[in-house]
Image 1 (spheres, rainbow, N blue to C red):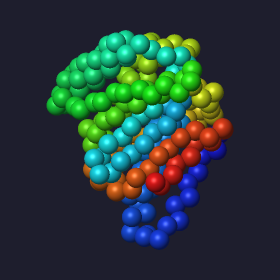
Image 2: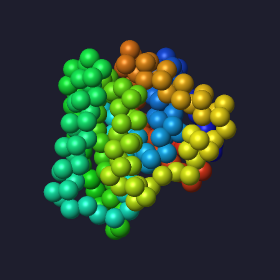
Image 3: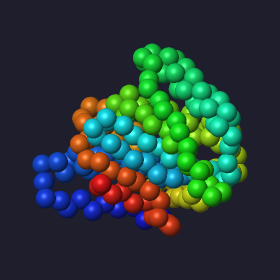
Length: 181
């Protein structure tokens, strides 16, 4: 798996902030092979996590799953002494694939949420949930540990400093690529 950054830009003052955003999105994709793409919108400090599923789901069942995601996240935050959080879930169907978009405020997002979301998606969709073949268990242990630790650091940085760049991170064959939109 290729993992690298091209951070040359016109405004060097925002390089650290951009680097944080790039590393956050890239590390999320490396650490969570269930994620197809991650988008960050600075205007609303909103992050969108995209999961791709083979097959379609009736609207009522999708609404039930969205309610489960919301209740699970609210319970998670309640158990961790946090305030209730905002969550939005919607889906697009393209042929035989469904993309489920989970939107959250990055400023209140916790690393454990990703673990919970991925587990809930895996429980619900099983083998229909598309996953990258490169998982933390199939990567070199030193690299996977580094990425996991880096993701924790990027979450901490993203909580304390606002990222101003619009970005999208996605999988491209054997690579994780992050673009400044």
